[in-house]
Length: 304
Length: 304
Image 1 (cartoon, rainbow over the protein chains, first blue to last red):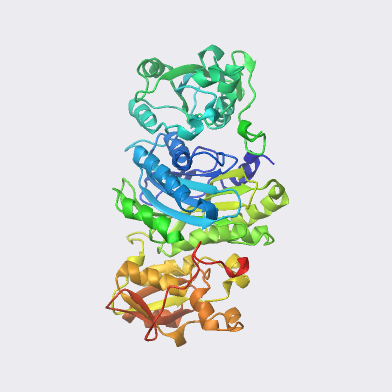
Image 2: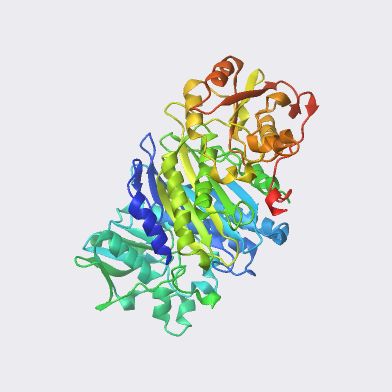
């Protein structure tokens, strides 16, 4: 049973309750309040040995815990407004390790401007499990940006660069919240997602939810310096995952200006286009499978 | 390091950010949206071996996962409007066990009328870790009920009965959401909490947050049939925890009518009163220590 199956099962049966605009299947769920405000909310679980190594610095782990959820909120074009953390720790984590974890959590929250509003601490005898929940809101008058809004004729863009994140960036990345907020302030993106499963898989998510073909130009994919030092750099950029860059579509007319200026100081690269046609992702003219990391589907490199 | 320490550390430094009305230290955090709506949000983490036994039925575990968080939202006088679950499972959990877990999650969500709007599934090699997040809203025109609103002269009441929950009820309880919503529809409760740490500890939470003395009448505490069969039943009712009943204060004038009618078909018992004076809890005329279960503070009976 792969990750998508269990989530998919819930989705099939709970897609559209009253008040729920978008449930399972996007970076975050969209909830509508009684007063008509739209909120987004996302939850992520990091497990020792799966999402970080037991020896990784606790401060980096705490930082990642907050950043992964803020990244999901940013991918909805929203600003994080509150964060909760629930952690299960072993006894030997108590003391220095827990304080460093907390410092990382607090530092990331401050960096993202999101207040820590709740928490829960409990004990485990096995791998630590760390859960973050982040709530967010779209800027006034704007709606959350979904995965389903890619339209034929849109350009496909990505912030930063991709690949090789497991060498360290996956613990020290900064959620692209400022970039997302500048983007929605400047134009109406069609669809957006953060690159957590890998470019190929996440492009598939956009294609599937939007019902379109996405074509990626292989020579345009921005490959990280780390991935450039590995065998088959493009493959790393396509499949590694945990880049936490923003992958989004905008009307072609807006793409040039955004690529030229970047977003909030971060480079942006046009890497492809949205086409009418079957749900598929093309790399140049060749079909591209969803090859990114999925839990239970394949092991992460650092678990191997 | 006891549970309260880590949470307290966060609280001391992040108590009152903009938009956050009540952060750490209540059953749920209160967030105010840009449009002025007040939301509550809570997150809970259940760990195999700590909050349930490895052999407990997966369906009961899934049910508990949702119910503990809905119980927190109910204790704020709010209705749950969305639930997210993030689970870390071992490989052998996949298949039947995971489907039963899901059935329990779905059943509880349906029973509480709360849509499942998000989720995350990952793998662990150790004890399963299950995290639930529930969002809620107060009824129109009402504010969330905090722990800090107990006023001298109020009566202290509790739903249902207490003690011996670990014999089974802790897995099969129903969150007192209907009772909470009927309560706030009928009067303005001062303070409310759900009894998760044990009556004595949770009464302390109310006393501390409200800055009052709480006196409990020992002969009025409703002791569960299970606890009545144990040695020292009153002690079980005071200290066991995981009862998930509602403990609340109301103006004395409202108490009699609520005790007579009950709430949503559940009996309600007046067990004490709120007095002016030092922050303390009295059992009759004797000081009562916070003796309920706290993580890292003492072991649960079934871990011993």
